[in-house]
Amino acid sequence: MARSTEEWIGKTDDTPIPARVRLRVFEAHKGVCHISGRKIAAGEPWDCDHVVALINGGENRESNLAPALREKHREKTAEDVAIKSKTYRQRAKHLGIWPKSNTRWPKRSFDQSRPLASNREG
Image 1 (cartoon, helix red, strand yellow):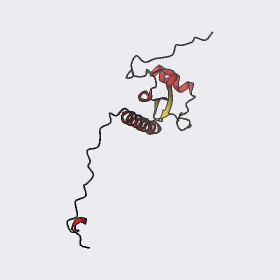
Image 2 (spheres, helix red, strand yellow; image 1 turned 135 degrees about the vertical axis):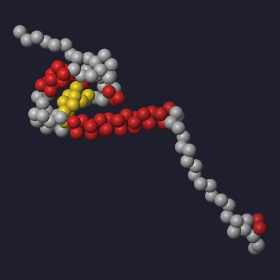
Image 3 (tube, helix red, strand yellow; image 1 turned 180 degrees about the vertical axis):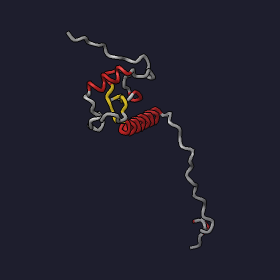
Image 4 (cartoon, helix red, strand yellow; image 1 turned 90 degrees about the vertical axis):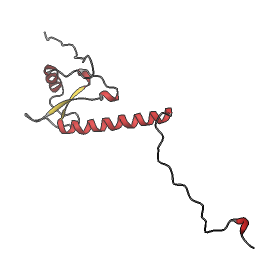
């Protein structure tokens, strides 16, 4: 009879993933990078990636983890941060709390070389 293991859930978002959980995640996905779809070779650097990023509402739990090649993981993390930043800006603008620009449009000065309409002859 096979022993079932409970899903690992991190106490906080910063809780590191234990080695035993990394191994289970790697085996559950058959060693395939979930971003590129390529088999991870022995000795190749890889990370456990949160499929739904923590900053975008994902949870720090085993069911939200998948193996990813380190380079692909860094690219995905950069994309996740960009998505979060854009979402924050849009929400802040919608709520009216986004800071207004300090850039002022240059004022057009009054053209002194042209006479006023009331001073024109004719």
